[in-house]
Image (cartoon, rainbow, N blue to C red; front, top):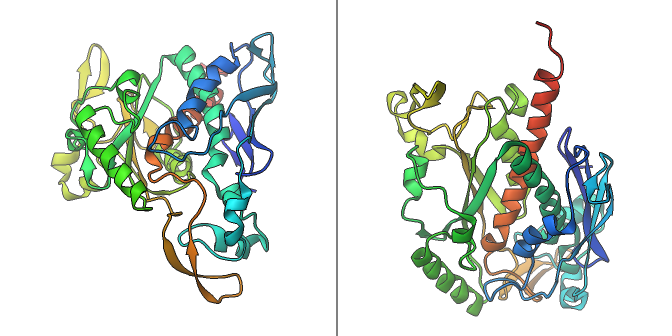
Amino acid sequence: MGNVFGKLFTIATWGESHGGGVGVVVDGCPPNLPLSVADLQPDLDRRRPGQSELTTQRKEADTVSIISGVYEGRTLGTPIALLVANTDARPEAYSEMRDKFRPSHADYTYLEKFGLRNHEGGGRSSARETIGRVAAGAIAKKILALGGGVEIRAYVEQIQNIALPNAALLTAGAAVPFPTLAQVESNPVRCPDEKTAAKMATLIKKMRSEGDSVGGLITCRVRGLPTGLGEPVFDRLEADLAKAMLSLPATKGFEIGSGFAGTALKGSEHNDAFVNRGGKVRTLTNRSGGVQGGISNGEELFFRVAFKPTATILQKQKTVDTKGKATELMGRGRHDPCVLPRAVPIVEAMTALVLVDHWLRNAAQNKVFKFV
């Protein structure tokens, strides 16, 4: 019921924010892949709470355990179960929210749909659910790196009205240097430009001091992709990427390549001309963002994801209770004043999951049987 993602490489996440733990079951992983906790933990550390003064101060190590699917350091081809225990849950901080709906949160819709809800930290609607996605995505990233030399890099492009200076160049299809992991991780904002990151950090700290929150944009770029990933019509590569990104908490928009800015151009300005470069068909520009007709064309894949300001803020807000009576609610608990820094590894994980799934699907349809 909406908890499984993928077709050949699938994940099923489970768990709630303040329950015993969260995790994921990964199915369809090829056998014999070298895999250990050391492959998974780094991305979970990038996602975990309490890693800087810019994020929620919930103290969770988010240490992952591999329960099944791996033997003597290699995957078996059977389902891989991964578990992360919750160790710093404080359900008492949410007692007032048992009977009051948090504005712009999932409290009301969950109750309407299921007839009951877990109000402690939002239960299943909490971003803590994304731990399973990041753990599974780390497996997918290793498959892509070892099997195809694919590199995925997400980073914070904009927070509120503070943006990277070269952001518009990428959207316009121009070549922009691919940032290194060290550049992205050089600051707690995860913006690869130090001056811009410093301004963003100041803004986030200001929001925290005011009990408020702020949103922004994350850019994700992928290089090393082969041609042929993606399906025509319903399962276009960009369509599945959009579904993956918009399934993340707090997301409000997705655009690939030129995105919405491309609507202001004429066809003669927007088209990516084909050229022969080194015996391969390439494009002079990349306003398509690496995808044409729903299928990867061998150019760099890039897209942007919009995240709203965190819904739970530490200010009094007008709301209603479960009986429809007008009231006020003061947010409590430990929350991110801006979700973007911790969302970077989550965006990378979902990207990897989509790409591995489509790579397997492409191989199954086009590589296994030869009729000529």
